[in-house]
Image (cartoon, rainbow, N blue to C red; front, side):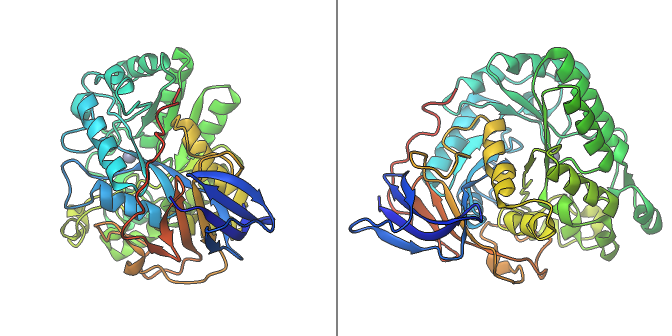
Length: 444
Ligand SMILES: [Zn+2]
């Protein structure tokens, strides 16, 4: 493994320093550093962040390899500055057993572009009827700590209660896709002025908010830990704020697209904007931005959801829900949160690296840029202006809502366990052979 000397990087956008990486670990941070024979990376003017961690990625393998594979999805992750992704279990077969999560783990290790931490299904087949073998997944080599039926809501309150109780014994967390299925039957977009004008069936905010309200109360009752996926409405922010004030152990995520895009975009019937939960009103966008800035919302998570073009290049009603988001996430957060002055780069490191790793109990990621820590590093050119294009996409699918849109910045370098996965803005085709220290060896 190369020794790296990164020169002149702005640590969390502040003081410039050199970073020495040896044997996959940050060996030293200071000024005027050098090492004989080291590979030198000129990071002058680049913002240095800890490698990003995504708590909500759909990698589609096993089962839906036409949309994405673990190899292509982790290449997309690296391109976006991510060094670890949590893989949602809505694969085929569903990741509801030790066998499937161990298979995903092994495929991620073989790919090498980012650490893949499987998320286990809450219920068998994500059918919502009976609990999956959470304990078997937790004690497998994949050491699953996050469980979700994402794509579906755990709607039965008794099953939700049992799941929350079960994961307490090993500090796990249930990540809920909050959507009342009855209130959203046939829904095509956010329920509001635009849906009324277009005559499309609406997905009302209350269908999300009522489930979140129920689940924070269940988490309080059981004394367990709840995570809310892709929170999207102003009312949801209020409920989380209330729950945290009450001392309930709840965390919440928002997606980049809910920080930037509104339901006005649906007027063009371009299915790239069809997503679940749907794009909401401008008031909701402003509320989730405020919630992220004040800490009510803990993290940004991509909900990267690749689909082949035939599932998107069709009429609105027939199109699949979902957007790819790994490659664009940091740039969207830069535009919606940093350029607007709502948060700074240290906050970006918190909401896109440290806190997602902490929620998911993933060791070896989300650690500070300090000597002795694993070398998970993202170097970002925040001064660059540009347009997001297909050349920015590195996964197998093209369903990005940002194609043709102005987005600032570019990930210049990504370093995963000391191995360069992105250099000068390009994904490295052949990774240096590396012997990654197991992220799982020391996991609690
Ligand atoms: Zn979801």
